[in-house]
Each structure stands twice: as structure tokens, then as C-alpha cells.
Image 1 (tube, rainbow, N blue to C red):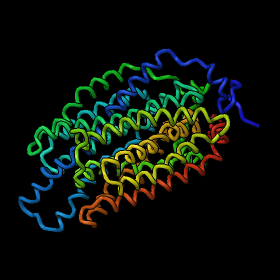
Image 2 (cartoon, rainbow, N blue to C red):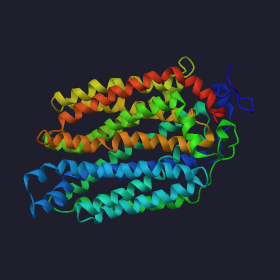
Image 3 (tube, one colour):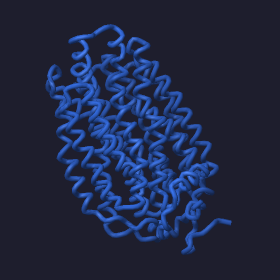
Image 4 (tube, rainbow, N blue to C red):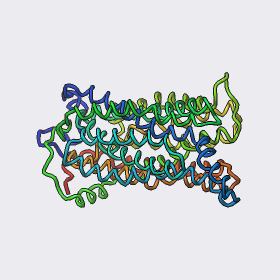
Length: 454
């Protein structure tokens, strides 16, 4: 027999009941603000990838050629550039649980405002860096700022929208991920191209500061929604954090979803960071007069705009006939991504662009459903903890290490990135299997979530 809410609403959130539940006034304003912040989140994050060739030449190669440009050090150049992305992720994942802890005890919008302000200032400071070490430190502070935002924003959305609508809304929220990444690539690539032999790449970091500060100030004016409101629950008294983690680890849907997303994040982080370098190293020609990195950014934006909301819509639509639909959608899409990712390594350009698009489409398709799983199988009072732990694991074992590992593999193959990309494809397949295995548990864990306190 299915457990029920104290108000009589089924724990799973039946479609009819959830649809009749009103959405709080002003929810769309909060969604718009969170969407804009998430957009700049990914612009800040991936503008670095577009400027890697210029940073590598100016901050690393020039420094080594001035004094100690011996062969062993030159072979570590790719590893050092991958370390910039890995350092950001390490600080992001380590601080996320801290801010997740604070989010259950103080204003979430206050924490979001602090995080946005910090990462905006740190991103601007990245443009001022004159050495590799200085740039590394600034990227660490960008990670700290984003750690204040990542685990909190989905919990605000989850308290505004009921389970039946949550998948679609979260999918639209995560549309900012591919679009912001594409804008980061385009912004970094275009500004760096102004003066390839100089330092115009620095402006890619400067121009995001003012918009970020304005969004941070707007966040300070927002009010928190009531915790558990969309689930028709009043948040219970706060409990010991250790108990929360044990509850999450005893939830099969949460564990399998986290493992699947870890594998996906490993692949996404490596491909996103190294694709600009791959295109440049393979001397991919312009198409219709457009630079390859700009084409890649446009493909990323288009694939994300189409796939991310589509994944949420399909996941929500299949909930009734297939209770494990979020897992099925995410797992099937990631498995389909594997042959497409392998194909673009062997098919010559410009035909290979078709497989780049398909690989990204399938990669983004499961993004909304997988994050909706986290929201639906955790009790509202521990949702911030759930997202914080989720973020820590997927980045600790995912994109915190994958850019460095692919760079390290490339160093062992004379700078060639193809062997590392093959390694990444294996993680995609593993993630798809984890997600498919989770489908059998989702209905039970969603129904039990409102009562899963210990």
C-alpha cells in the first residue's frame, strides 16, 4: 500500500493532485533569476576552456622557455592545463557540502548572492593573472563561489513546484548549462582571436564581472519559499547531519543515480575542456567561414536547447506507464551517446560535426531527469544535503579528475587526445548501465521520500 502525506496526498505525488496544487506567486521571477545565474555560472566556467591554447602559450610555455624548457617539463604542459579545471572542481565539490549544511539553517538566497558575487570577482581576477600559479588560485575561488550555488538552487525550485511539474522546470533550469557553456566558448574564442599573439584573452574574464555582481545583488532581495511547500509538508526540526547521509546511502535510487551522473560528469567534463584543443590540434577547417570553436559552441547550445527540455518532458510524460521513466530516459540516452562519441573520432570533418551534435544531444537529454530524481527521492528537509552530497561525489570522481587524466593520457601519446577520449567513452557506457539499473527502485523511493527521516 502506498504511503501518504499527512495531508492525504500520495507520497509519489499523483499527476492529478500535483497539477491542481497552485504554484506560489512570483515563482517565475525566482526561476528567471536562477536561470540567469546558472547561465553566467557556465559562462564563467567554460570561458577558460576556450582560452586554454592562449593561456598555455603565454602563461606556461613562455615561462618554461625563459629558464627551464627541458623535455620532461614540456611534456607536462597538457597536464598542467587540465589541472586548472580539476582545481576548480575540487574546491567546488569540497565547499558544496558546507553550503548545503548552511542552506538548511539560514536564508538560501543570501548564500546564493554571496556565491555569485564571489565567483564573479574571482573570474575577473583570473584575467589579471600573470603566472600559472596566480591563475590556478583564482580558479579555486571561482569553485568556492559556485559551491554556494550548485546544491542550493535546485532545492529552491523543488520548493516552488510539485513533483509532477518538477522534471520540466528543472530541465529548463539546466538548459543554461549547454547555452552558458556555448557562450563561454564563443566569448573566450572571439576575444582571444582579436589578438592571438597578445593578451586579449583576458577580456573574456573581465566582461562577466558586472553582470555577475548585478545578479548577486538581485539575489539578496529575494525571499525563501517555505521548505517542503510543494510537497505539502512542513519541514521538520533539523536533525544530525550524519543521520541524513545514512538515509541517502540507504536509498537505492539516490545511490544509482549518483553513480550514473558521476560517469556522465566524468565524460562531459573531459570532452568540454579538451574539445577546443582537439579541434585546433587536428587543424579542423572553418565551415562557411566560421571558426571551429564557434561551430562547436553553436552545436553545444543547439543540442542543449533541444535535448535538455525534451528529456524533462519525455521523463514526465512517461511517469505513468513507466514509473522508472527518469532512469530509463537518462540511461538509454547515455548509452546512445557512446557510438556517436566514437564516430566523430574517425569520421572526417565536416561530416563529423553531425556526430558531435548527436553525442551532445544524447549527453544532455538525461540531465533534467537525473537531477529530478535527486529532488524526488529526498525528504524536503534534507534536500540541500542530498544535492550537496550528490555534487561532491559526481565531481570528486567525475570532472574534477577527468580533464587532468585525459591530459595525462595525451602526454603519454605525444599530445594526442584520441586515446583519452576512448577512455571517456567507457565511462559513458558505465553511467548508462547504472541509470538503467535504477529504474526498478524509483517508484518505491519516490513514494517513501516524504517519510524517510531515519
